[in-house]
Image (cartoon, rainbow, N blue to C red):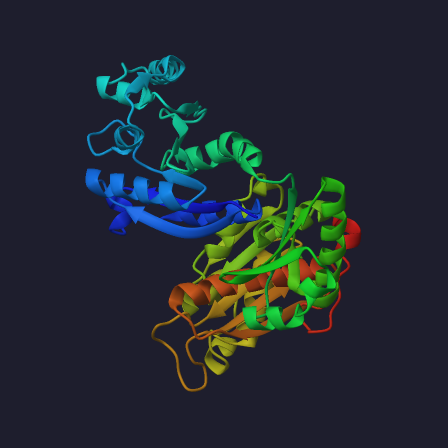
Amino acid sequence: MSLKCEVLSTGDEVLTGQIVDSNAAWLADRLGSLGLEVVRHLTVGDDRADLEGAFREIGERADVCVCTGGLGPTVDDLTTEIAARVAGCGLKLDQPALDRMQILWQARGRPMPENNRKQAMIPDASEVLPNPVGTAPGFTMKLGRAHFFFMPGVPSEMKKMFTEQVVPRLDKLRPEPSVFEVKVLRTHGLPESKVDEILDGLENQFPGVKLGFRAHFPEIQVKLTVKGADIASAKQVLKAASKEVFRRLGAYIFSEGQSIEEVAAELLTMEKAKISLAESCTGGLIGEMLTSVPGSSAYFDRSFVTYTNTAKHEVLGVSEAILNEHGAVSEACAKAMAEGARKISGSRFALSATGIAGPTGGSAQKPVGTVFIGLATPSATFVRKIFFPGSRTQVRQITAIAVLDMLRRHLLGLPVEASRFEALPLEETKG
């Protein structure tokens, strides 16, 4: 039987929506990957009575609680104080944590404020969870029947602490020895319902495999989780199941975990090829994605953001005849933009994007969401028309991933536009 887990987020800023609670989503996903059953999410503000009530209630009904927030130095950081109250104990100074804080402040060339000393105080009945990347240590203790893990609210600190300190302790709490292997396959080009339909029956075909989906616009992620008695058997089942997923979804799978820009960067680097961009409706988004990958100078040459017709003509050489006869949002314009960027830059490849992101500017012939994307290569230029009647942000996002996926397909020798029956035996090269 799996452990029942709850995720508790604290802080007025989280409760009121001033910041998005990405911690809870990340923790729930990781706990599920570890084979633990997440049964409830709870958010509580900086209120002593509410925090105490939450700790006591969770302590009565859950096996595990992972809690974030409230470990800072200010008066509204109450987690440690309330946890000690519920446990009926006092607070103790964790000297290593205090020493580390003082070193961090010295490195900044400033004396440590006295209120930071509060962060080194933890409940007597707890065990410290070291924080290698921040000032506040976490701690773990039992409250009622539940094992609580208290971590900072800063995502980078929380994630490192969870991975290095909490996961090994959770492994020891499991009622039976088991291992969990997880693989995430990222797809583009099919809606979630279609991916679900294509993969129907996979769990029956591979007993012990749990299939999950995550709509992370503009992609669909397929998650395979396998529970086994040992790592070798779990890996073997996972490999067989993922091979079947590749067989069914083919080239719609663009990676095993990597983002589309990381895949494009890897392929361009392998080709030792430079790329340039001609962007209109995306306004530089494609360039931002490609240059967010470390080492992008190896393949990224330049980007032209030509928003107006005048810019398309003067900078990229799109003819006035094309703009007057076909318009900026057209196959001809996308083709000329990509070819112009490639000619000016001398890059081996060039991508283009021109469309109507909305919410205004559409027409009966070209409604909002109409986009043309182009890829110019040494031998040919490819253009695709895509249509997605979403928000302005969604149109820009789906355009960016679509044009990078078109590049990926070309570099892998695949048709630049997806077909349901394509097959891509990535499992043979990616393990």
